Length: 272
Length: 363
Image 1 (cartoon, rainbow over the protein chains, first blue to last red):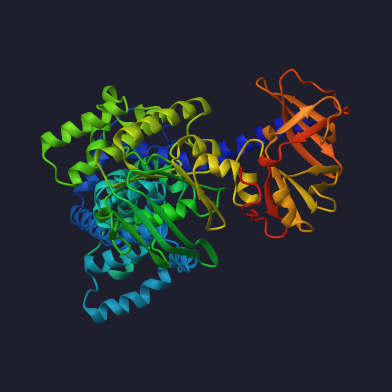
Image 2: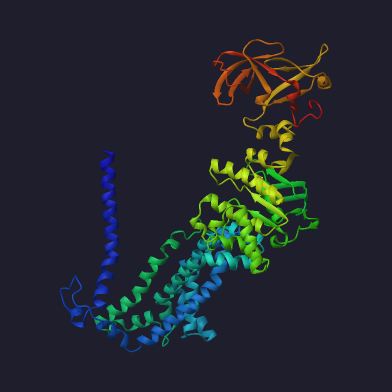
């Protein structure tokens, strides 16, 4: 009896998992398919289910459209700058959270996450006013600052989990063997943390790469790629939309596979 | 090499006092074991000496130099950690060479000293490997080699063998003892394993609740524990403790146990009327199967044959104690035996404080 129930539960659980996976994967599949089809194939109904003719025609059309290349360059620059800001501030914070017991550590941890509780759409308007005052409105620097703020919680928590996974005894051993705290960090902790820090960096890069609302509100002419696509979307032909969608999607997908093990122990409590 | 001096060292973590006014002097070349149950402050005391913990008050001296405010790298110490702390991203050679490189030794000197340390620990074959390719025992050897390679003044070891399996631990224990004798290093060794402490140390400092309770040679700690804590912590089985009162009504003094009267040395007469605890080791009780003069009757509860001897759990009056009998003495549970206790093997302690009553029964 109980065996039958648990069997049924497992089937239902798996069915639910498959359903959820399909819900995400089917659109991704069609977008990818359309992005690499010929223009005619994109317009055909019913849709083809299997790739027949692979073509880069649609992608080329997308990349050659007006404004795509400059906004792509801006996106890369913004994401790069976001990465630098978020890591320069986030890595020391992550290290502190992982290594030191201090009053309010847990509150700090929560506050870091809580910054994500404010909808960026609402936050963007006062931000735009401030940026106008500072004279960095409609610049990629303004966007990068906003993105760095958005990415900060992830930068802090992911790096703190990376550092928590590195035994403090390694650092202490280095210190007894002639290192100062700083050189112990540079010689022992940094090399060991590098893969995890790289993962955090990529993640931050992607957060900026995919961010559209803040970028749309804070800029008019200096659009990043997602902001640009959002603006021209309604006036664009179908192939452009699919190609653009794929272009925004692909990097995030890759990254999720690379860094998911670091995301799983984001709270820094699970070591190894 | 150097001597080490702790003076009134005190360290608290919030409300918890981990190390409470500890004084200890370790002579040049001596091997001192800090022994105690987990949480007694022994590791914290070691880390205070290493400079990995900042003391609340007190001072430490290494080789006559005040090291209290020096960072770890200026203290001329080397440390072996419980987790080995072998650097995973460096080959064994680079691990052992790490301290020497930090000291800016020449390449030739580094290579020579690494080879010497490696041969002492028998890891010459492993120098080109990464730690992940080593077993726990091999990593342990790398950690020790790394610590001795720098020829530090003082070698600190924090439960270095506790992560090894039992057989390997026994092997390493003997090897480590021989090795440390050979390099003649001043060593402070932390362990909760009394067998390790008894078998390795020149002296043992027994710690309890942040204080050093007794510092003595292993034999003295075993035979003449300073209090009931030390007697109960050291030895397998632990020392038996029986509440007694010394009576000296007519001539020879006796100890009144709950299970009978035991004649004791005449020097005990001055303790007459005092409530005491009688501490006696299992092997200091002679088991007789027939009634004997001055013996105390007891009932056998459990018999545990251990090969070299039989460990008996017996009851006499209100007291339960463990005694060891010859392997051919096999009393049935429930049967009566007679215990003869050599008065000079008894450790007398005060019933209230648990502290040994000095001079009462020194052999």
